Image 1: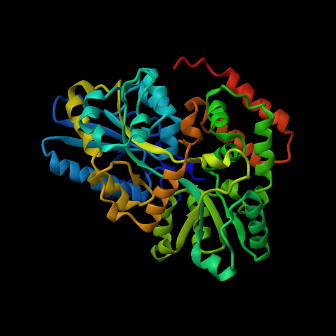
Image 2: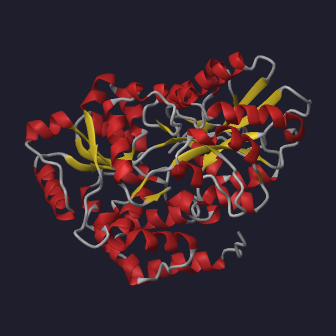
Image 3: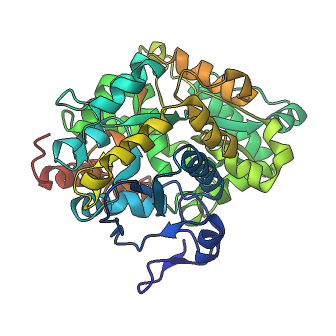
Length: 448
């Protein structure tokens, strides 16, 4: 993983990715401003016709989409001066508390569900019920529910979502005679066969800490069901529960099939092994297609995917999966928000259009538009399949770092615990799980 320059706040080395801070050359080319790691946004104090936005979509393809959206917004609203400050995804998440509590931008990109409600409850977000009234007819009930706070007010505009599934290359499966596994045992059998064929069965890279969360989520959903998983994320269930032990014991059977040195690999580097056909499978979000296109555009049409296999238990019917929803919100403590409020709401309402969301999708078709007026004929075959899979899911989660407290999901907490497990999956799980529960129990009381 690249080192952080302590003076500038920039990451040194590596390529520009969604999870890494943008380098100055790319920022200049894109016409964007990069915040230092402390996330102290330079909000305007002038009145009228201005809006500042904090963006955590820092991957190259995402930035192309953001530029297209902002160009379209500026063209449609020539009297509004728009300034966007971009920070890499991980840094934004790790420092979001300090950011929103200090001098944030007027609007910022964030997540729906628990993570949205957390900051709304802390008084760090501004309700947008009036704007929502103007655009709510363009969203399904599911998306509408995802942006309602505990106080029943609306705090965000849903803009895209993506499911987590198991990806593979169709030509590799055809050449090797592999079939898509329907059950957990089928998956283990396939992995063993891939290994004997000289392949890495499962591409995996966790240097950023968050990819492992997806595997924990799906195993817990498959083995223990949606209700237990949601309870575990919110503290209603204990990490010391034997059901959690079963998750880690099951996961340990998959780890021998992972990419060598996965702890030091980014998700993009892991994805590249799938593109090069040195790995057979890859479990990640649909946004990974953006990386596939960057490495080899011809490979995109050869990508296919399937839901993580089932265990033949009572929870199979849920067909649960992670399908995180990205949203745009308004901060509460921006020093310029009072002056910029009308412009900021105009910006959020612009994001509620299908045509706007399709600009982001065109840059990275891993992000599926939420707006119902988005032209479905423009969606790729892969995207339409994703829509079909998500529509069948009876239970949908937002991803571990979105479904739990921000102070429990960071680099020094759950990400670190999962890396610890991956490093030594044969460790004393009782003691390991107790350490997680002890950490949770020491967190300040959440009064959301």
